[in-house]
Amino acid sequence: MSAHVIGNPVPTPEEMGQILGLSSERVVAVRSIMSTPSSRKSSKSASRAAYAMNLRKKGRSGASSKLSGKR
Amino acid sequence: MPRRRRIESVFLNIPYDKGFEELYLAYIVGLTQLGLRVNATIAVPNQGRLETIIGLIGESNFSIHDLSRIQPSKGIPRFNMPVELGLALYHSHVTKGMHRVYVFESKPYRAQRSTSDINGIDPQIHNGTAKGVMAGLRNIFRQPGDVTTVPEMLISYRAVREKLPELRLNAGGKSLFEASVFHDLTLAALVESQKLIERRVRMHQR
Image (tube, rainbow over all chains, first blue to last red):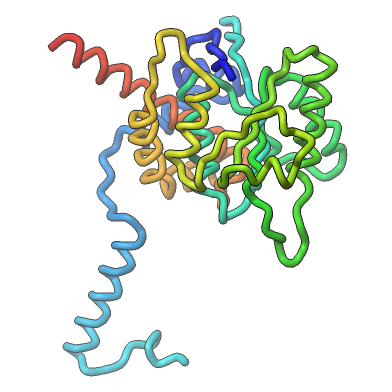
């Protein structure tokens, strides 16, 4: 099977925005999201961190949290 | 008003559900970074759905059919993907091969057994991974000069995946399969594509 050579260059986000009928503000917003360095950790590690934090709090106060009380 | 550029497009026939999110994202990033517009049946209402699907296939240069989801959903097998593959094959037949049909699977030789009518088509095997999807896409599509590589696509894929919460929030959609989120994922993949191009230019200048 021979590969198909695509006849057009990769469009810019602005060109694709026009093709899809999106506003230029929308393109700017996505550009801004993608250019902001990610400060958050991945959801898995974030939830692990929150769990660890809860355990520490629980240890300090000696009281059980609402979550752990529910069965 | 500036003229809209015409770019080649691909009809994407995949399961649109939570279990397929990673591969869905891989298809969008990979196809977009190869320079293709993705036509998908996202947000197509049930009324007139078949006509819309036929229209989307008709306006696409290619179609990709992922037949890897064979497990029943809530006890019921899903036949939408094979139905859409049949529509695309017929369209390819009447256009004398102008519309090209590609099949993706997760396991080798399974499509030949599950859908033996398409034994003339060699499926691309993605093994259920984003890397496999991108390798399959690079097997069937080339850019003039062979520009974007699979490792580069994977870097972009990870960058977009990391920004999913923000992109979803910005588009106001709960699911990745909503039209607004789908459009923003396409734009995000192209922003990453430009970063790749800039990186390449910097490397050449050194």
